[in-house]
Amino acid sequence: MKKIQVVVAEDQAMVLGALAALLETEPDIAVCGRAANGREALTAVGKHKPDVLVTDIEMPEMTGLTLAGEVKERYPQTRVMILTTFARPGYLRRALDAGAKGYLLKDRPSAELADAVRRVHQGLRVVDPDLALEAWDSGPDPLTERERQILWRAGEGKSSGEIAEELHLSEGTVRNYLSEAISKLGASNRVEAARLARSRGWL
Amino acid sequence: MKKIQVVVAEDQAMVLGALAALLETEPDIAVCGRAANGREALTAVGKHKPDVLVTDIEMPEMTGLTLAGEVKERYPQTRVMILTTFARPGYLRRALDAGAKGYLLKDRPSAELADAVRRVHQGLRVVDPDLALEAWDSGPDPLTERERQILWRAGEGKSSGEIAEELHLSEGTVRNYLSEAISKLGASNRVEAARLARSRGWL
DNA sequence: CCCACCCCATGACAAACGTCATATCCCTTT
DNA sequence: AAAGGGATATGACGTTTGTCATGGGGTGGG
Image (cartoon, rainbow over all chains, first blue to last red; front, side):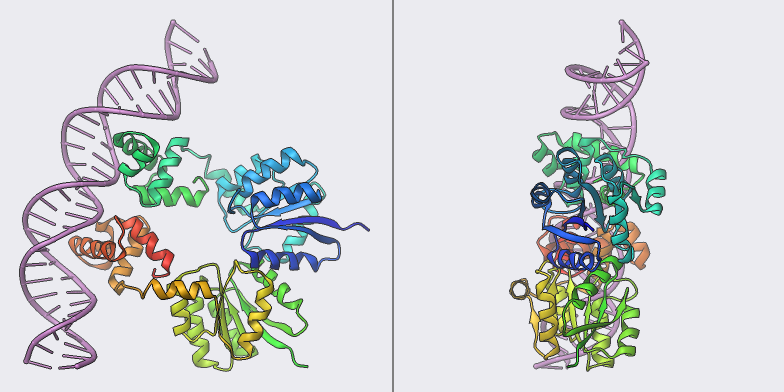
């Protein structure tokens, strides 16, 4: 009997180790590689050619979402399962677009992990049903690239002037984009807009 | 040989299960209880009287910090070890004030967890050395209670007017407090101030 | 008792922010 | 060719924010 070979990517070392321990308790699963960021994960996948890659989203070096895209392209025999804290419609959408086969939330019971790995390994899709619904009716990302860049910086506390300088724009233009973003999101100021966009996975 | 009895509290079910699995791999440690929030953790401690409580900080119902205080007071034979993502001086300080014996970060290697549990069980203190230093030179929380309340709301995107109404203050007063907080923190606007305070564990 | 330190308020001013109208340029789709 | 949309800009307007000076009241420690 051949075990399912899994690589796990997660930037919090403690959680990485714990997840690996959790998977190792399953008789039919073996953790053949661990990675602390996206880049490491990509090389680990290249080296071990695992059946499944379980990866977090927010990681240094390379996002789990970009990672999913790369793996899909370069090692299509490895199926990707996202394991994240964030129930954000935009993340789910991007993950599926990038070719991920599964999207599991970290607040699901730990018993589901092994099961999800098995299903993904069998070629099935595993997507949190509540989240899938929410993704549906929250609609697509309404922001343009520029609006995203600017809203992101505004959310970090930068002033319009600073943002303008950073992106080589006029200050008025920056204010225009912010105004546009605020109205698209139905917010009442830049901070609320940034929080809203973030919570939907659009930033 | 008696195993060290441990209760684990962590709001992300998947991580909770994984941490428990990690601890269970140790021959001298037994996980006798699990909790998904502070209140559950408190009753679990009351029921099992464990040697060590390993707990996250940011949880629903009751923070790990308040929890630490309660446990210290009601079940002093149980030693508390904080296990958190956040390297925030303010959190560390509050944890120690509340009687916690250990403060471990989730980005430490998973091998350290069992070790830290053993040490805490023996009555030793376990504190991340880098963080302890940072806590030292970042000084104590300079904010007053009011400033904290107001800065918190400002960080959520509320306007001065909204905050004033919510707290039954005049708008000018709110602006005064914000100005004071901004200057205390060396920030250049409310958003940056909120981010700064948050990153130090003062919000 | 006085001093320090919260709490709360007002008024005034400059700077930053949010909105709107308007305009050009460029690219893609019809 | 026309229409749409994104990127960029300007000017003008009112609102919000950040600062400062200056006041009042409360509480607790020396």
